[in-house]
Image (cartoon, rainbow, N blue to C red; front, side, top):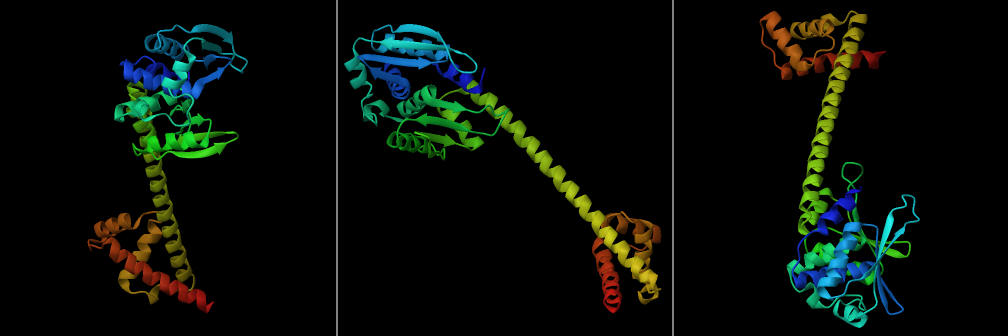
Length: 304
């Protein structure tokens, strides 16, 4: 079962009072119902959502929809649940604002009803990627631009940074950021889905951080080796012309120890020299003396 289905299953089992049920049913029908020949028809592949819509009709309108189950024609051949209502259609259409691009204010009268409306939109037309399998992405596929912008504005009341793009002949409102998707799941009260999502997100963030640290550590190792190799090459060049005597005694000691410990970092080399010679030298002091070696090697190269 997809992560989207798990989220919708959880949402379809939440308890609602009458006003909340009206708001949610308005959003669901607005985004999934077709109205023709005096019949309101809703189709869904999710049995839990179908049962939820059936109960909403029964509780709010006092009518039990006719339910038909068909085998789908898609690749997975899922069952399709079709709910039909032929009575009280004018009441349903007018009271639930199905004949308007933007629902009346009483449908989204306050913060709680706004959240429930957005929950209904997700149940009808939303999907969210499983955080374990792919990139973070949540979307709603909507019929027209005006309504898509309306949903985007409502989502962004909660700082979700949603955006709209046209996709073929429909409009997609989407959220890309993992933290914002988690906020949306929390906002619509999909708590079990949120816990799963956050567990995976934290694991992935930790894994990415570990990889970045490993990459950074490897880059540092590579830099140390490259620096040491360049220092060895400079010393070998100076030796090739018998030029070590051109260096002062302290710098000559550093050159000798570099040739003895060719892969040591500056910090490691400073500790070795300090211990073996009994004369303390810092990493900064080593760096200064290697600059003298480099300057002499560059003069030799320029002369050649």
